[in-house]
Length: 280
Image (cartoon, rainbow, N blue to C red; front, top):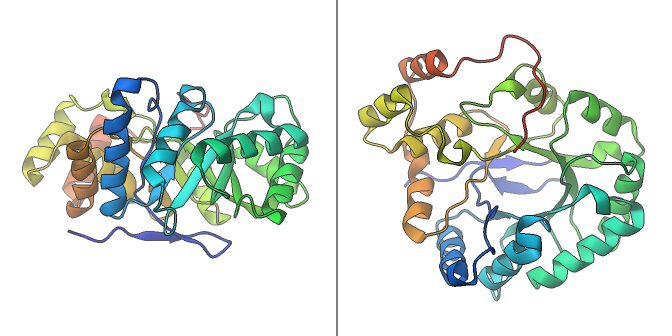
């Protein structure tokens, strides 16, 4: 099994480029035990980056993560997010403390602004810096911010402490390749790709299926391999059962050829102009 590549953040942290998402986890008590086992299976396979948010199942996903990481917090890279309406200075701090309680840990490795709202970026950044000084987070970043937002953020005091931008990126959502992705990599802000297989909606594409068949892979594995082929990009697919986790982990065993990439470009054309930032 090929090792998971790592990405170095500007604070020196080395994180795996393939992690685990938790969107839609924690919504059904009947599924909770299987979700916990899936996350633990991913940890055993080296997918030690776990992404969650206070929004997911109104905190339910964080509770699932808390059960999965109980007794094994060391060595994990734990990410959560604050909702925009909570992202004032005082609200960010309170939201983080509530997330920590649900997760059963004393700190987050990365805390993100989920998307931009009415509160000024300066207030959110100030809160993030306070949380870092208190040891409640090791670092902070953003999510769903476009190029103009990033430019504005980096002009704020301590805005250059931003470690990552989590955005929608997959074969069918390539708009960031035109400007946001190059800007991010140039400024040392890695991109964390959520919904890297478009929640399964692209998996019946004929070209993707053909490439997968040539490699003896599943379409989802090829879609993940495609996202991870780029330096500075992290993928956080969600899997709710152990078999699905193992398939995701094995995506790194497939190396896409120039012919594969050309075929996928024809089916999913790269952007030729600026596009509005896509969100789910």
